[in-house]
Image 1 (spheres, rainbow, N blue to C red):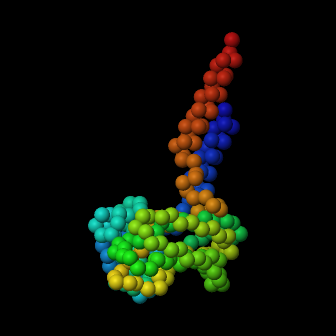
Image 2 (spheres, one colour):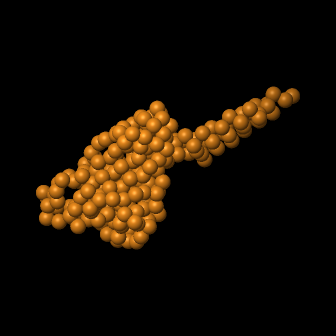
Image 3 (cartoon, rainbow, N blue to C red):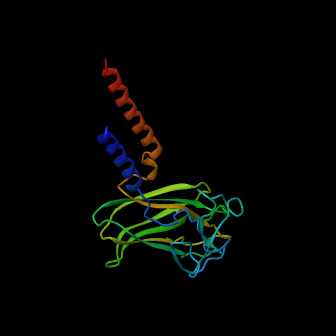
Length: 220
């Protein structure tokens, strides 16, 4: 009985730790300023900001489209400019595989002839400034779309770099929304694939009940 309880407790502990998001404030629910102004001095909590564009927060149903999750998200491309960049440093286990996810949407002013919005995603090794992962993701739809990528950590000290690389704007801004950023350990799997602790607890309770019932049936 004690051994069974120990196994269940270990499973619950592992489920809560194995897929912890390494990115702080990935949903941008802790803004530094409200609602729209963002400068290098007022980035979202946990992030650094640079670039020439005007990136801003948006309230749900207040401007553009609702957030993919929660009340806030980041919008690249304000005032018809590009080049805005968000970065966050994080720690990983060198040599292990990691899975990243984020959501993109063309936020507003979607017009015929406007270009695809493009977000460049890089994982940078801070030990030697080499690039461990590099790809451009495109979006031309006001529906939130989940994007994903995998990489192997070259060192323990890494940086996630997200840059608006849209090449041009036609007849007005086409802002690109970014929300719900995560990086977890493991390849090709996100937090949604992890069994919920409550589910594991119910399974454990069922196993314990089965064991007790079995013992009672053996008694004369």
